[in-house]
Amino acid sequence: MIDHLTLSRPDDWHLHLRDGAMLAAVAPYTARDFARAIVMPNLVPPVRTGADAAAYAARIRAAIPDGADFTPLMTLYLTETTDPDDIEAAHTAGIITALKLYPAGATTNSDAGVKDVTKAHAVFERMEALGIPLLTHGEVTAPEIDIFDREARFIEDVLDPLRQRFPKLRVVMEHITTKDGADYVASATPGSMGATITVQHLMLNRNHMLVGGVRPHYYCLPILKRSTHQDALVEAATSGDPRFFLGTDSAPHPTDLKENACGCAGVFSAPNALACLAQTFEDAGKLDQLEAFVSRNGASFYGLPTNTSTLTLERTDAPQPVPEPIIVGDQTVTVFDPIRPIHWRVVR
Ligand code: DOR
Ligand code: ZN
Image 1 (spheres, rainbow, N blue to C red):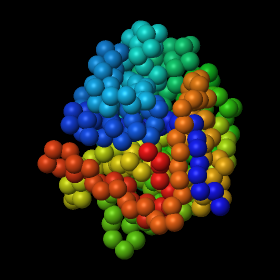
Image 2 (cartoon, rainbow, N blue to C red; image 1 turned 120 degrees about the horizontal axis):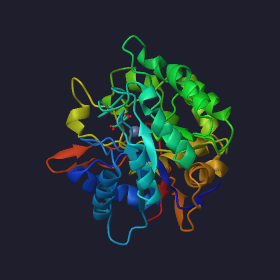
Image 3 (cartoon, rainbow, N blue to C red; image 1 turned 45 degrees about the vertical axis):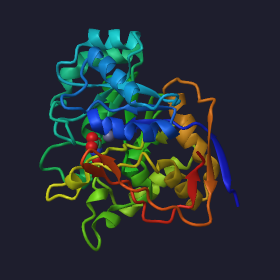
Image 4 (cartoon, helix red, strand yellow; image 1 turned 30 degrees about the horizontal axis):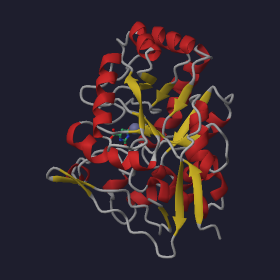
């Protein structure tokens, strides 16, 4: 049995770091295990301009422990008034890596998102010309669409028409949760499209969230789906297919706002994401594909080199405890509990 695994240092291609005290508390957990992360722009107010992104990047760097091997890759929040010249200048200056499309109202802090994608056509044209990836929160938001169908409907109603209109636009379907998403991405020309997959969507399905009681710490968006979708995601992530790569979507919220009558969406997995993934890949008999998923495929999609530094995981006979909640001021943030025993840990 394999008991040590040394990988090129992983990257996280979808991450929420927040701001202020929360940023200071959570950023060190990502910086200790990941070399780079695509940082989501859904602050309040959102990161909309090159100047906003530069200022946020400086705050992130200030929150990273001295000597950490970590680079934040910044994104802008696409709105109906995003200026193509501003994104071009920010891209040319190396400030931003991608733009994020949140359909208005789809999730946490997405009120400023796009209601009418035709209003962003000039931005898509410029992104296509410059090769800037568009990262999508792939859910339609129409109130009559069932929450479990929102991803499949996004592909049909928004994503596919968009890709036909802008065939050279490079798109990442973020945090896919369905077989529909995995199949759609797997049918695209490699290099034109990718998908991130989270730790929780690989390890859990909606029964884990809803049977025997509501478990609010598993509520995230897009919502966990049925087990056949979970199986399709595991198949995609462990296949080695370069179109699929890790985006933890680690999204911290204070525990009292999760354990609430109207709980927030988001799972905080940064502290134990890699250990959980090693277990998931081992359970699937695919440990040999872990490095492609966490360290190679994403870099290759973004046209970046694989990291030359390494990270080692070791297998332990005794299962590892779920990390303790982290303290942020007078609140805590609860860490992802993967339910199954985790026999892996990062060697630090
Ligand atoms: O569960 C989620 N939490 N999904 C998102 O899309 C946003 C995120 C957050 O910012 O908390
Ligand atoms: Zn997210």
